[in-house]
Image (tube, rainbow, N blue to C red):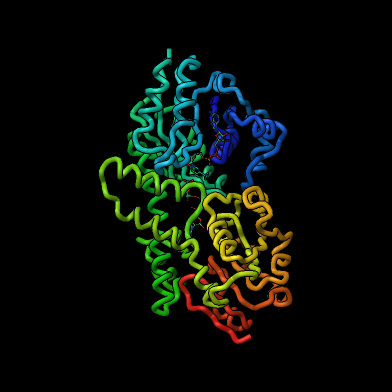
Length: 439
Ligand SMILES: NC(=O)C1=CN([C@@H]2O[C@H](COP(=O)(O)OP(=O)(O)OC[C@H]3O[C@@H](n4cnc5c(N)ncnc54)[C@H](O)[C@@H]3O)[C@@H](O)[C@H]2O)C=CC1
Ligand SMILES: O=C(O)[C@H]1O[C@H](OP(=O)(O)OP(=O)(O)OC[C@H]2O[C@@H](n3ccc(=O)[nH]c3=O)[C@H](O)[C@@H]2O)[C@H](O)[C@@H](O)[C@@H]1O
């Protein structure tokens, strides 16, 4: 099948590459000339494990191409994916200007029946708006389908190639059969393609992200209570996660959810509720709790060092909003760095992938270390913000020589309390009792 993907960001690039891998002829379109030039020169602009192998194979075999020209990109395409940004507008609702601009541009240049697919996360009613914008100048028949994407950064290729489910919102039989044919190679595992109307598909995406954000936030509140009552949130997680009605995943307490999607999508769903005069109380609480959770370690740091952090140096391990990505959008590490700098403290940070992105934002306000150990040199304490596997089993002997104090503040519960106590560390984590060692 011939496919065009408009918007070659995270989702567009993964969508295009994976559909090329299943034998389709794919052209990705982006207005960012530098990005397209990079892609045409074989440079992948994002860090995503496993994407490179598929990308190079499909580029080499001529199934995956890139262009800045919408009219060239969509020529002969049976399906056009819109994988465009939907950032929060000033009032928190999803800003549809990118999607609707492309929809308007598409109208006059369509030359045969095509299925236009909303891959972006868009509020209820967007498919109708996209249809109206295209229809204004279209001379041919077309369908607009809502096909939200559920991939996670860091495991995006696996999520796309072996989806738990594919949600397709359309009432057109013609579009249904095109989408069925396209997804057939990806749902061989027996996982379902779920058809519904466009509005329900749009809502399904927000419900999924908001539910997962709520699940995490619930555990973060349980963690906060555990600290007060003397319980261990990791035991609670194991204790409830084994109940198949609850499930083991997305129960890890920490310093809050971040990333380019949960924060924006929870906010956008809350905005939709407001527009429809529905008081969605749970969502409002999720947002409030998550904002507080992000800088939860600060009082613990002050508990140890006292209120005055001026001149103290903190080593930070992990900047990305989660492991296996260089993405720092809404990363809790940034909130913590800003809070520490505001207190007059100094920060030396290390992350395996995200340092360039942080450097672009914070510049020389913090120091950047070449290795996790270099970050510890002369630091007063270590703070863990992202649970990269590299940080799980470090050389504690080496750490002891570098750190001024044997004290760790862990926002991701990377270490066992017993291990920390045995090694004589003072160790603060989330939802567990602090280990306070005499040094
Ligand atoms: N990043 C993720 O993990 C996931 C994102 N989503 C959703 O997918 C959508 C896209 O997200 P990302 O890929 O992260 O965005 P992104 O910001 O990484 O990429 C969007 C791309 O669209 C391009 N673009 C903007 N206007 C354009 C135009 N007129 N013509 C052609 N290209 C244009 C930009 O240059 C950029 O390369 C959002 O709605 C997001 O919520 C859904 C699931 C996962
Ligand atoms: O709409 C999107 O863009 C995507 O958003 C999330 O994917 P992603 O943002 O890549 O990352 P997640 O793995 O979901 O993690 C999000 C945040 O929650 C945090 N988290 C996750 C799980 C957990 O148990 N605890 C926890 O604090 C992570 O540290 C991270 O900050 C969803 O998981 C995807 O299904 C969805 O497609």
